[in-house]
Length: 65
Image 1 (tube, one colour):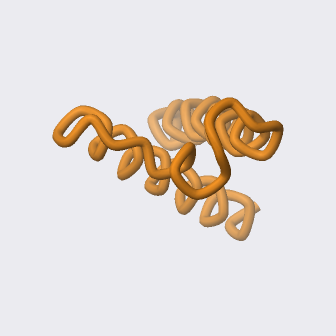
Image 2 (cartoon, rainbow, N blue to C red):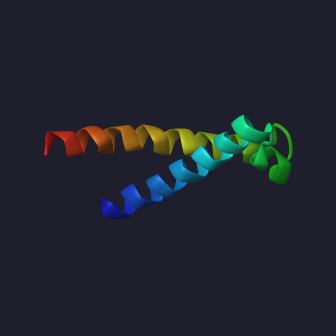
């Protein structure tokens, strides 16, 4: 389980960096690399979203311990 948590954390950090670039500089790194609204961009956004949801579960799991 610890490996899954670390992988999810890495993807969540990547997502946070991308959103930071969008918020600060109006620059979307994912669209820049893979193209605007490409299938790869959508897959990356989906993976980051799913890992964020997994991290929510991990957060509440640590609160119960």
